[in-house]
Amino acid sequence: MKAFSSIGLLFLSNVFMTFAWYGHLKFFGKGSNHASTSVWVIILISWGIAFFEYCLQVPANRLGSSETGGPFSLVQLKVLQEVITLVVFIIFSKLMFDNFQLSINHLIGFVLLIAAVYFIFKG
Image (cartoon, rainbow, N blue to C red; front, side, top):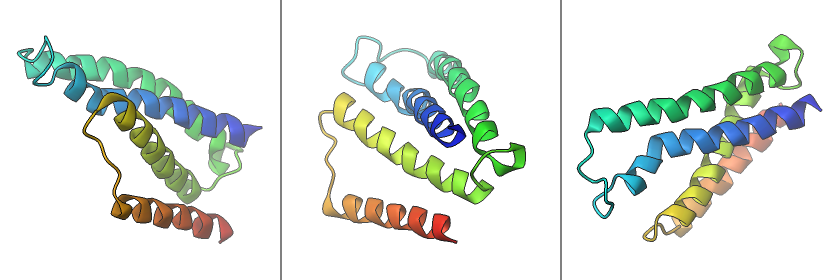
């Protein structure tokens, strides 16, 4: 149960993280009504969004870490985090940006990351 809770919280935290890191490109980009918004305002908005990412990410790592009674080693948690980040990023990018295209190189890289998860968990 801790594993599923940890992974679920990591997914949710990554949704907030992705919006904080890349959402401004969509909502405050060249084609938006808010393109002239000061970068300092955008930074503050991103920090506000990132706050919720941390509110989910910290408990996810505490639940998942073997250091606090969870099922994952520190390395396993980090590799899970990276794969989840890419999955959320791809979904976000496909939904939010019309010009986002996945190439064969992207897919090969993603398969290699999944292989990394396999080898990290096998060890």
